[in-house]
Image (tube, rainbow, N blue to C red; front, top):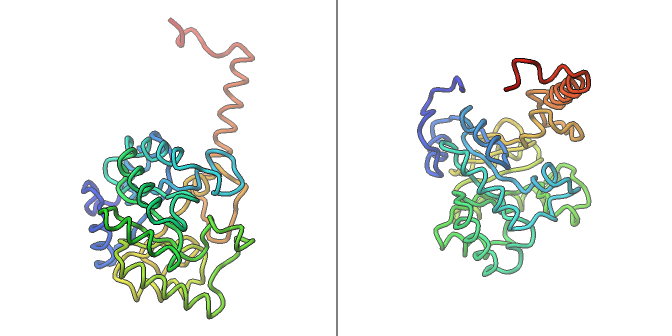
Length: 273
């Protein structure tokens, strides 16, 4: 159980995240995609669980986030919700479910909320998807924005390099961030942008700004669970800190099991009926 005792049992909501920003308490957010892991990190005291479209990579083995479907995201979110009591659960809207068609965006968001019981959705983009976000918000569905490196646009960018390093892109990002707050988003993720720019955005907005590769001047941090636990070792960006080496631990445990089975050491007399 987490040593953080500040309101540790109290359910995290969108309004509580704003309270946390106001009192200067940092927000801890991780991804999860299944019941068992969601239960573990919820019990540890995580504030927000993101059912990320990164499931496309770490759960399904795809090269990008683009192939994952709405049905698959609903499945993962539904599983996570069943393992969660305290954390706020946010579900990514996958590629193709909101771009260019605000009615489809609303229908997609409603399906996520009704079928998975997730508590909010996250959407990548700024002014170009304003109409979709506004329509979702009119239905009373909380929306978390996402600016900077937006992985669903990887084919447009052509690279996962740091975004908003030039003045024009930085100014658009600041403008988009203010727009997202003004239309009613409850929080914002900033991915892989210069720390100074992220700090500026967080200081100008009243809603929480959660960073991934955006420095320490924002209101909280998010990492992909498989990366920070060392399950996935193929991905090692500068912003990632590994808090465990589960890849090695699991490999050794499975190796020991195989040896015990092969050597007839498992099961022993105490492990049978």
